[in-house]
Structure formats: C-alpha cells, structure tokens
Image 1 (cartoon, rainbow over the protein chains, first blue to last red):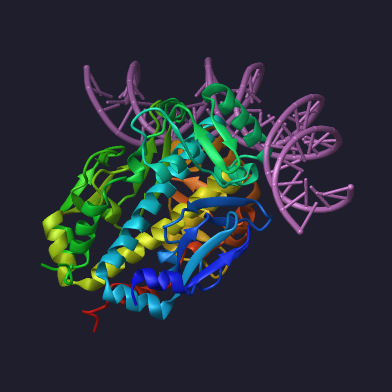
Image 2: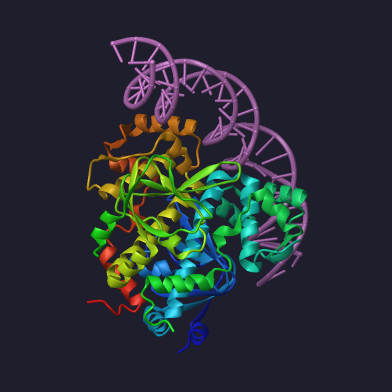
Amino acid sequence: MTWEASLARNARDYLKGADLVREGERPAALRVVLSGWAQKYKQLPDGRRQILALVLPGQSCDLDLFTVARADHSLSAVRRLAVAEIGRQEAVALLDQCPNLAQALCWSEIVTAAIQREWTINIGQRNAIERVAQLMCELFARQRGMPASGGGECDFLLTQWQLAEATGLTQVHVNRTVQELRRRCAVELRNLRLYIPDFAELAALAAFNPGYLHLGEVDLAADRAASLFGGREQG
Amino acid sequence: MTWEASLARNARDYLKGADLVREGERPAALRVVLSGWAQKYKQLPDGRRQILALVLPGQSCDLDLFTVARADHSLSAVRRLAVAEIGRQEAVALLDQCPNLAQALCWSEIVTAAIQREWTINIGQRNAIERVAQLMCELFARQRGMPASGGGECDFLLTQWQLAEATGLTQVHVNRTVQELRRRCAVELRNLRLYIPDFAELAALAAFNPGYLHLGEVDLAADRAASLFGGREQG
DNA sequence: CGAAGGATTGATTAGTCTCAACGCAAGTGG
DNA sequence: CCACTTGCGTTGAGACTAATCAATCCTTCG
C-alpha cells in the first residue's frame, strides 16, 4: 500500500462547519486535507470561539492528535471539505515503511508550530487592519509562495465571520477593516478568491515577514530530522 | 557521556533580558533550562513585542530551532537564567544513544504546541482579567500540577511589564487587572512568588481547562511516539 | 419565489490604551 | 551611612479602538 493509494482509499467528505474531531475526544486517525480548508479551533464554555489554525490542501491535520490521549482542540470544515482519514494501524504501517513520510510529517508540525506563534503575535500586538492584512499575506504565501513582484490571486474560503474568529475581532469590525483594505490596497475578496494587486504594499502594511513559513527549507529539514531520529533507514 | 553529565558540563548563565537566540540567526545548540525562566518572543519592526512562551526549569527550549535554517523567533532570559547549551554534534550523539530522549523531546514539543494554542485563544478571546488569571493557573499547574483542593504557591518570575507582553495587554492595564484579582480571588504576587488561596475560584474566573497541558500522559506518549518512528530500539 | 447566509451600515458603549506622574524598595557609590 | 539611581509598581485623566446592538441589503440556492 503506497501513501497515495492510502489517501485515495480513505477519502471522506464533510459539510461546512462539521466537526472531524472534538476537543476531549481521543483522536483515532491521521488526516490529510485533499480539497477545501479545515480549521482547528477552541471554544470557551460561554461559546466564544477562536480559530487556531487553517489546514490547506495537502497538509496533514493532526500528528499531534495522533500522539495525545485527549484532543486539546477541535477540528472542523471551513466549507465543503474532503479529507483522507487513515486509521491508526494503517498509518503506523505506512510510517514504518517509509521514514521519509514520518520526517515530512515532523517538518509539517514544525512549520505549523511556527505559524501558531505568528498568529499569537498577530492577535496580541497587531491592530485590526494589520491582523487581517497579515492573514491575507500568509494565506497567499502558503498557497502561491512569495511573489517576486506585483500581486496575484488565491483561494480564500473564509467568511468574514470566520475571519473574525481567526483574528480575534468581531465580524462587524472585520467587515469595516476589509473595506479599509479595499480602499488602501485595492485588495478584493470575492467568490471565495482573494485578489492582491500589489503584494509588497499589503505586506508592508501588515509588517509581514515570511520567515516563519520556512518556505523552501524542506530538504534541509528532512536531513536534520533524520539526524535527530537516528536516520537509520536513510538512503 | 550521559544526559545529566552533558547538561552539567555545558551549563551557562545569562542576565535578565539577555538574548540566547535572535530571530533570523541559525540556531546551533540544543538548550535545556536548568534554573530561572526563559521566554520565546517575537518583535514587530516598530518594537511591539509579544512573549510567545515561557520555558520553565527542566524544559528544553528549541527542538524546533534545532531543525530549522533560521530561527523564526527569539529567546531570552526572563531573569537570571542558567541553561545547558549542547552543541549540535554532541546533541546528535546523545539522541542517537538514547532514543527515549528523542521521544521525550518530541513529547515536550507536542505539549509546547498545545500551550501555544491555548495562548492564542487566551489573547484572542479572553478579556484582561481572564487572561491574567488563566496564565497564573497555567504557570501554577505547570510547576505544581493541579491541586486536589485549596490553593498553594509557586514561583512567578515575570514583572508586570513581561506579564503584559505575554497577555497582549499594556503594563498599566495589567497592574489594574492584578489588583482586581487581589480583590476578587485574594491572589498575591510578591517577591517573585504567586500565592493562590483558592485555585478552583481562580480557575473558574479564567475558565481554565487544564486538558491542554496533558499532565500525566508522558508514558502513553512515549509509546505512541515510538510507534510513530518505528520504535526499533524500544525495550 | 422564498429562505438562508453573508455582507454592509449606523449609533452607541465598553474596554483598553496612552501619556504623565508619583511611590517605594533595593542596590550602588562616595 | 547617606544621596542617588534604577527598576518596578501604582494612580489619574482622557482618547480611541473595537465591541455591541440592531437594521437593512444582497446573493445564492433549493
């Protein structure tokens, strides 16, 4: 059984808002997003909700969940979502067969943690317009990489309400903020797409520094991870 | 060379505020806090600073830093701090000798990531008094575990200014907030110690749910991590 | 065509920030 | 041993960002 075959065989669909994992449950599968976006979130007892992270196609959701007795956060579909859910046994077998896979997952966890840190400073220190601009820059860069110059467009599956939950703002204030971004940077948000005419301008407004995404470091990382875990099966 | 001997041999001191690693540098050592607290932080170009995480004695600082080309955040001393700094070569040798060690570090990374997520919802959704109360609960629980009943005391090495940088508030507002916590929960902050007469009361105020600390899951986790990486050298 | 979800607008308020002093205790140097 | 400095905590007044409450509008979709 190859990785790709395993993904295809275990594909499953979810509707917008449906939970894949709920906080407190014991997670039982290794999940990879095939299409659509997933969101990690946490909720306070009174209902206040914070989106913690967005999982884009090709990313895995929960190596952490795989290792932990009880999930410390929930996972749900941003919109219609397709994921592969690989059961524990099959996942262990796959990882055993292919140590590169374990390393790749490890690396993905490391980048995920770095993004989580950036979100922390985003919410803690930036004001509304910077927060939204920063998140737009991040999601663009994660999908398209850093544009050499000019701008471009990418998927943007969040409603303004979800954008608010991700940035720690209210939906109403996000709306006004998006309008201001339209005015100042000509950024457009339409039909689940984000249009950025001048990426550099938006990045400057957000003080966006892409270092935390560690783009283009994958190969280096695989080697280092190998050395960390002995790399006994490395070719 | 054993782990303990390696720690002792590579001990080093830092004064309050001194940087161990600066964002953008390539980190070269595996660090373990021996005494005092370390803080991970990020800074925006205009100087706004966010403390991302606190590293307590016995914890390692930077398995992530160990794997990455350029640090995406900085690391500094909260107050006088002693750390062991184990060079890359020696670290790799140690990890190779002792796979349990690699697993323990992995587990610590997983808990660190969970704490980072809790900080994200803390800053994004809780108000000032809840944020400070939550952080107090966390730091108490990480040092003392969850008290069966009543309260207790623990180290608390942050100034109000650092507390502000950790919670995304201003120092002035933290001061007023701490005063309110004194009034409402009789919490005291004196001489680098935190006194909590009634932990349950403070936890209720903060909506503190300790699940994310994954206390008492270490053994389970070691096994799971082993299975993730083949566990070839497990006894 | 009606219903539902999402975006937009306005008016008001609350929470937190900003700026500016001041107090207190510990440490330092003469 | 005293004068000075420094770090940290405390207080007050006023400004401002973002939250809240409440409609209304637009779009999509069954």
